[in-house]
Amino acid sequence: MLSAIRPIRRNPLEFLATTWRRHGDVVQFPIPRPATYLISGPSDVRSILVSGAKTQSKRTLQYDNLATVTGNGLLTADDPPWREHRRVVQPAFHHGELAGVVDHTFEALGPWLTRWRNAGPEVIDLDEVMMEVSLQVVASALFGSDWQANAAGLTKSTIVALDAVVARARNPLAPPLWLPTPGNRRLKSATAALDAAVDAVLDERARGQAVQGDLVDLLIAGLRRENGSVDRSAVRDELVTFLVAGHETVASALTWAWYQLAKHPDVADELAAEAQQSLADGRPGLSDVSGLILSRAVVDETLRLYPPAWVITRKLTQETQLADYCLPAAALVIMSPWIVQRHADVWSQPDAFRPHRFVGVDARGQAGYLPFGLGPRICVGRDFALTEAVIVLSVLAREFRFELTDAGAITPLASVTLRPPEGLAVRVSRR
Ligand code: HEM
Image (tube, rainbow, N blue to C red; front, side):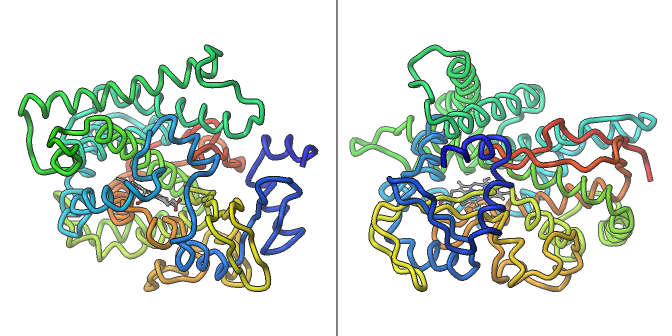
């Protein structure tokens, strides 16, 4: 394992994929403690995340490090308080809320539509645009806020915080958080920026402003101490969790979708034709989404090839039988959608971008498909994310063409999500 430290730090995706290709679907790493496994068989992964959900926890290095930013929010928490908090937030993600997601997404695209309609062709970083748009969607749909003006600062803080978290997780000698090293200082000031944004939302609500029955209101009403007072730190943890989990993931998926569309102009043209036909001239509505079949297939296929959450870990709390293997209690299990979603047992041409494989197919039921996880801890924002992504692709593809300025292949950087290391430079022009 010592010789693996370098390859893991250089390219963890390649390290995991090579390990899997060499050793198969169940691999135990030569680490004394905890017993650590890479599990990649589609049915084994399902059995761990679904059937084994009651005998596992999220107390792994991955989630403990993430918790330095998100605290004990939904993504990192065990039960209690996970189940109760999930019940509290669930109404914000019911099907009935998706019409609002369509509206907020269209609004967030507004300034970009105006700019690109009025300017000549220009070169932009589309990754940055996707980050800012998806942040604004979270801000307006879930927090009732407008973060357009400070979107660039907040998306930067998110990336700095998450990169620092990952750097800590990959450094066996990571300094304690109280030491003022440059890395720790960056992490602290980025987290402080996210906290400040969330605090401003809570202060507004405390002054009785902008009450609208959204996620913030659900949390304020639902997370109370025994004496009836609002548990502000629990609410803060959830809001930072949603800020972080709700925008960089969607932005990552969209950026890779545009990258693949630019590499496959025939699919981009077909997507534009679908959008021109299905979307009425004005605002898109929720009823339009079911007609955007290719757009959804492009999102599904992008999430297969570039799963933003490329690694999922669990600590087993009990001995667990997995096919012919017995995994001991306290074992660490690593599962990577990046590998499982390229498993040749269930995917034909696994490395090819072929969105048509999902046309008329419900991706959710496919074996070996888990971009949003599986089982009780499945992503609460899945339908929110899919709706947002389909609208962004269609509304922009309907009017604009995005061409790569550099035809070279881009290798994803595996941070908390998968990102293009230098952004995505494209020339945007009107169709
Ligand atoms: C393409 C976009 C997204 C992807 C790929 C994604 C992926 C995931 C995955 C894989 C998990 C499960 C992690 C595990 O089992 O350990 C998860 C959980 C979660 N996601 Fe997402 N997510 C996306 C968008 C969103 C959005 C838009 C939101 C909120 C607005 C969100 C909020 C959450 C939360 C709160 C959890 C924790 C759920 C729980 O444990 O109860 N995600 N996400």
